[in-house]
Image (cartoon, rainbow, N blue to C red; front, side, top):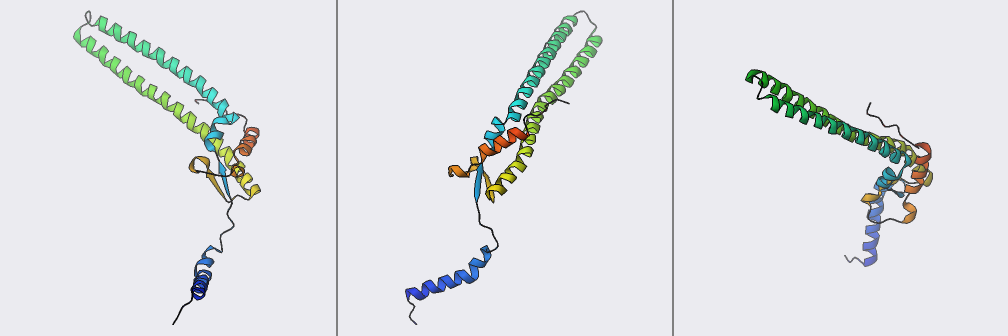
Length: 182
């Protein structure tokens, strides 16, 4: 039996048509879009406004921490000075109270610092939650079936990027975010 090149090609084509091709028949045509989330998170009006509010909160917390640090240092100095005039049992009790106060202060300080991280995360989530329906609408409007984050894409055509359009809409729909420590 002699196979010719045409018969081999025909056999491969038929094999493809009957086995592989039907697997892809249910998938829609794919159109890819790109969005730069980091750019949006840094340039959105609401994100900038929130960053300014958070900066003021950070400064306030830093001032409170600085005052508390100084207060503890002053109290420690007083404790050291009083050691020579106090009875050992009374001094030991004062020292334990001071150590407990320092421990409580360290916990409070850590909670304040963590609250800043929570504010940042909450702000980011608010922007992303407002951005999601915008991206969905733009994707539907442009027929985009896959939307990729720009940082994970090596190369893309300029017309695939919907970042600027999304940012304009986001700035209209979410001009600011109220930030507070509760």
